[in-house]
Image (cartoon, rainbow, N blue to C red; front, side, top):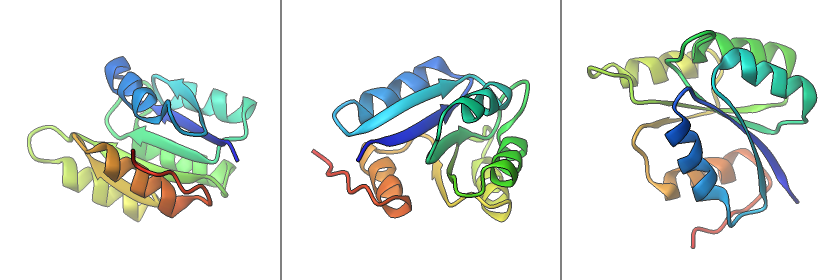
Length: 128
């Protein structure tokens, strides 16, 4: 079964990295540069999992998490953050308290992303 996934991150290199990690898996990857663009994609596609950065321009990740869960309650959220100046874990804790289903601190390993996706979905992706 194909997994529909949305990456919301203002860093195009990070979005490309996630796409590269998932290219060999049955995953359709959609992307958005901020939460506002992400919500446009959510209206157009049936997204099962959102991988969202926390700190972004336009609409940041915490606000996006709340809105996505309110409008699309079946969607699973993986919050990611590099945090800046040692605050990454604070942002990830806030994301969890707002309803994120999993969190990953940047940089993370391919295996960590795959494990989070496996825990949140019926898909069982095998790390190769």
